[in-house]
Image 1 (cartoon, rainbow, N blue to C red):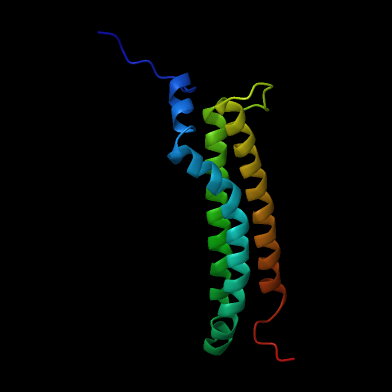
Image 2 (image 1 turned 135 degrees about the vertical axis):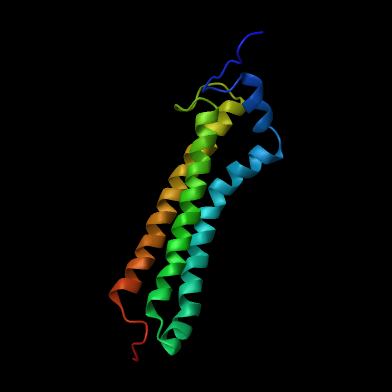
Length: 136
């Protein structure tokens, strides 16, 4: 009886079946689209919550919306990074395989998540700079 072998790199069959079917493809697709969706929902939620926050005098609670958005986007960036590392990391290859497609989509998911986090952070700066109860 031998000890089980633990390796940091997955066997070839593990990632090729994972990213060729819907659970793996869903994680790659969410890495691409969830960041911009969360940034747009963050902006709308800040606008919607502004009057409620001003009326109830709970200005600090307005910071929860972008904080939650940053957490969701960071989670998707982490999931994209895990997908990228599952196929070995690195840059794209010359062949057209599941691994090449997965590397490209995972790297794109990480970049889009980073840019979405910057957008959410910029929207968060507006909460710090401006009073929500300003009457024009």
